[in-house]
Image (cartoon, rainbow, N blue to C red; front, side):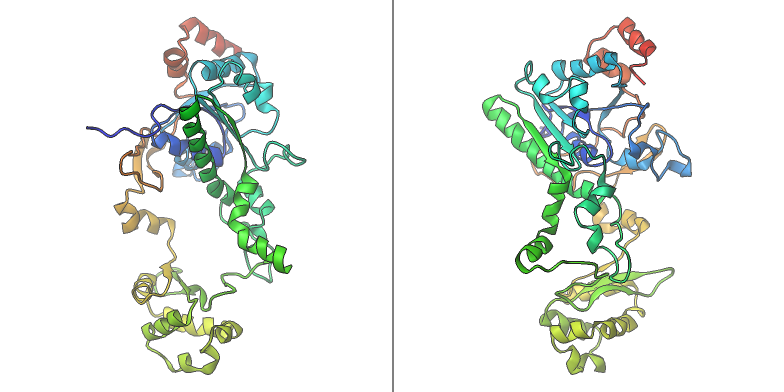
Length: 407
C-alpha cells in the first residue's frame, strides 16, 4: 500500500517571499501540503530577480534562487493593491485554505483584509503563521529588511571575518536558513492543537529572535563575564590547530582541521608521522598550542600542502580527528554521500529546464516526502486556481484580467 504523506490535508495560502517563509512552505509541500504561492509581477519576489540565472540571462522565471525554494507549489499572481485581487485572496482563504502564512510588515495583511483577527471571525479553525525580520510588534517591527540585514542585527557579522578587518557578512541570508525550522515546528504544533480542539491560532515569529538562539554561548558569556566575542578568522578559543589549510591540487584546495583535546592532538601527530616539531614542549598542552598558534598553523600547512584534501580528511577522520575537505558547488553536486541520500533531485522547469532541487534534510520512515513539481513560472497556475479551485467562470477571470488584478 502506498504510504500517505503526513500533511496531505493541509492547504496553505502562502503570502511569503524571499527565503525564510518560502523555504518553510516548500518543506511542508514536500511532505504533502497543498501550497498556493501568492505573488505579483508588479512587485516581484526579490529572489526572482536575483542571481544565479539560467545561462547567465536575467529573466523573471530564470532565477535558480527562486526555483530552489518554491518547488511543489502552485503559483498565482494577484496585485493586492487592487480590491479585486484582495477579494480573490480572501476567497482563497475563506473557501479553500486552512493555513495562512505571511512574511509582510505589520499593516499589510490588515490593509488587504487578510489579518488573523478578520479571518478568524468566519474561520475559527484557521491557523495563521506570520513572520517578519524583527517580529510584528515592538518599536522596530515596521523596519523593512531580510536575511542579509538579519545577520548583522543578530550579531553574526560582528563575529565573522578577521580581527584586523571590518566585519564580514556570512555567505547568504544566513538567518533565513536557521529561522525557517522554527516556523515549521510551530506550525506542526498548531496543527496538532487544531486536531485535538478544532481551533486555530495566530503564530507570530521574529526571525531575529529565532536566530539569536544560535549565538547563545557568546550572549551568555557577555551576560555572565562581560566578555564580548569578536572576529577570530577561522580560529576557536577552545581548539588548536583550528583553521582551513591549503592542500595539494589544481586551483585552491583546502581542508578544515579542528583539534580540541590532547587525545586528538596525539592522533593528529601520529597521522602526520610525528615530525620533530610535534615534540616541542611549547605544543605539548592546549594552552601552549594556542599561545603559539601562528607558528603551529604554518607547520601544519607544510604537511597539508603535500596531499589532496580528501586524503587528509579521510586519514584524520579514521584517526578520530575532526577534518573536512572544503567543497565547491561542483564538489557538492558530485558528493557521494549527498547523492546516496537523494539530496539532489532533478526536475524539469518550464523555462530553466533540468534543474537541481533539494528535498527536506530529514527523512520519515512512515510518511515519505515528494517533490511534486518545479517552482512555478510567474502566474503559471492562475487559470487552474481561479477556475478549478475557486470555481470562477471565464467571464469572472476576464474581468480580473481587464482590471489588472492578475498582474
